[in-house]
Length: 247
Ligand SMILES: Cc1cc2nc3c(=O)[nH]c(=O)nc-3n(C[C@H](O)[C@H](O)[C@H](O)COP(=O)(O)O)c2cc1C
Image (cartoon, rainbow, N blue to C red; front, side, top):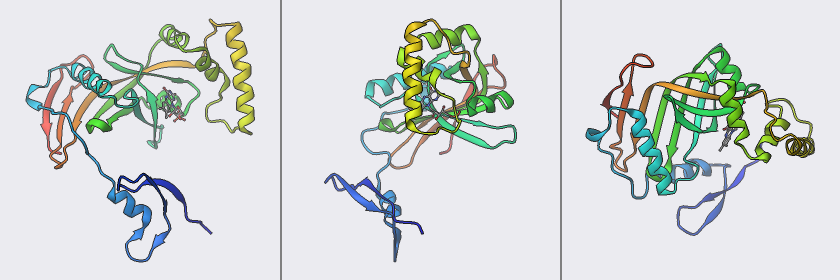
């Protein structure tokens, strides 16, 4: 039998968090449903976005937007949701960290043993989404994911802190884990190993890049008069064109 789930959910009244039960109520559905429908979206002072003044190059606009997100104090503005699909088309999405926008690609690092890497090996098509809540801005990219070479992947690995390198050595992505204590022990052993051999590189560490054929810049608006500018190109190396589309 399922038990009601409780959590700390803002009451929206400015009086701090309130415990909310998701148990069904008789008339208007669960309290969670009511709470979710009462939460604000696109609140606060939102930046202006004039589609008439966008540059021809979407990378320039992306750099300006992520710079503005950093300036505005958006938490973890370099966190992006990466969607991939396996050979049969079944999708998966997860958050990864943007390392750079370089040579036309949005770069991230991952372990070649992970599901995302396995997906990409069979189906290189992928998508990335950024959401910067303070500004009600979203950037969406679609394209192909390419692996950067072993030399740049190794350089990325060695630029990480000893603790991050140890964590990368310790883990076995997606494999069943007996207990949290096993992970702690593996982390401690890997840290000792990294301190003894600081130049050692995890062979599975791979820098990958999503190289887009489509990039959308989306500016939310309280009145729902959202602005969407979509850049497209026919192939990598071809010129970009852009247009305003209906929200
Ligand atoms: C804020 C945040 C940052 C993350 N950064 C990365 C990253 O840069 N690379 C990575 O492989 N996983 C990162 N992860 C973990 C992934 O979301 C995911 O759990 C892991 O990569 C396994 O995904 P997969 O099984 O779909 O391949 C991050 C998670 C969060 C919440």
